[in-house]
Image (cartoon, rainbow, N blue to C red):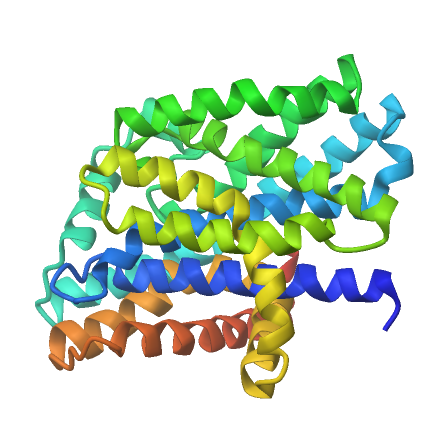
Length: 350
């Protein structure tokens, strides 16, 4: 396998792991009695940081020779803005009527009352100009997980502005002050309780790390330096084990942040062994190939309907159930995406 093809496969696998982490995080999030609930402190942030890392990596991997041209930065940012904001609006439009119908039936026919449904209708009934402006800037009451698409726009804007006004080296230097700012945010409150701007700033270092590593790899024609491959996976494991013995959420958050920077090295080392397990390797390739579609479609209906039906209504609540439901939701999300394409409605999200 040539090196470029090898790196492309690594990126797909990283995206596959990222979306798996995120869907499992959402499946476990409300299951506080599950003995594996503690994994939520890692999975959500790991998934987002991985996606952000690969976004930066792919930028350089595909456009390295063009990043020094200001006209490219301007046109690419515009295309990226459209590519991210279109599904933010389009998927909301696509899903809002199924959400309204499902929630109405849940309340009025099946007499189910879940906090999320009550909160949704409360927001709808009290909507105002501020609610609309908040929606346009990332606070989405219909499907809240789409804030990350807006965050990617913000991240691209910050990094491209630095490169436009200066150069790529200035972007690399930005890494250190943004890391310090991120650590400060993480000591204030839990990551997912932050507003969209602080949450976005915490992810900026991962985009810069992806850009930097892609520059090194395209020079060395290898995914990650040999030193990184040998040392960083072990450092990642040390940080994860240490986090299990650290009291307080802020200390854990800091360790999770630094371990997330090392996670790509740990995973790329692990892929060499996972490739021997054909079923796992094939699943991650599938998940990575459809990662964007899975991210869009698994919420607010598919995964939550599975959770409410199996765990809350049927009371089948073994510790491994959220993991099975997460995998089922991933496949169902791809089926939903393919149906949308078959109905020629994909213009809303692509």
